[in-house]
Length: 191
Length: 191
Image 1: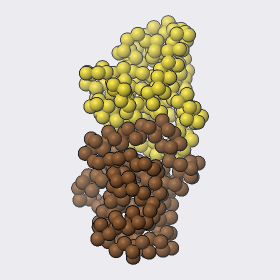
Image 2: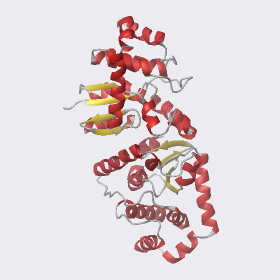
Image 3: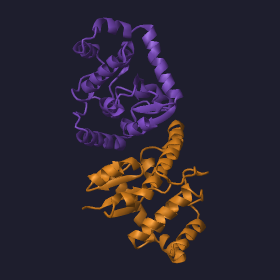
Image 4: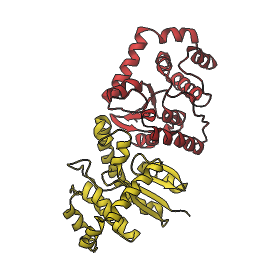
């Protein structure tokens, strides 16, 4: 069975829901964790902020919807005091991790920091603490994350997302077929 | 059990999916068919066209997504040669119909005309034919649909949608709780 590519942005509320549930849903099938940046994707569409901020009515719905969906999924949830938070460094750290299981574990820790503990995931200290709590070499990873190779890697990821027609997060791709939205995870897996 | 209010716009592709399936999904529970206009709602957000036209990448996804979803639901589907089509007269005709079952039947006929038969639902002749095929008094209804009362009725519907925080279609409301998107129908019914 082909792998499912999971495209996510650390600022994205609905990506939190997907990140916390994708492994159970995939039931052993390979999941490729692919962080990317929505900023350049939105900018290409002429938006300089999250659509949830640009369209406040849509934003109000999203915050209520996240409450309901997290309650239904028995996932902890706190509306962050700052939105959206900058996920660039966190995304680079994911790409600096060599193992898929480390990428998954760290990504879930970053989402929990942002959407449960209301921590500023743009801060290197916050991310360093998360790496250490997972037993990962924080100092070496932080250095690697800032290297030209990893910076370029993240740019490539975001460009690939654009080429695949991705316009929001979370998105899933299976054999070039694109599914947008956390509620499409099952459909993507069934493809 | 409280009724489910089904808010739809005749131009909306995803509303077609909801319209064709809501009665089976509701399984006898009361469904209130509430046509409204997205134009004024989008205009209030600073958009003068469908977001699927304003954001072509999102539009490309929607057309592919509709194909997949209709195939999965065994619903006929043809991408209309014109999008979005003007649903003002069709919406007024719905409001001119006295019975809920007539509103449902006519609304489904309009959706089929737009998204299966590729007919221009802005045209009075097209809508008149649909009314006649349902055994409804087309001439009298067409006259009533153009009355100041029905025109005001549709304006009121759209204003109420705005007050409820509706920003897209289809939407569902149950006891003041709002759900957006055809894939949220089950969640709305369970609320």
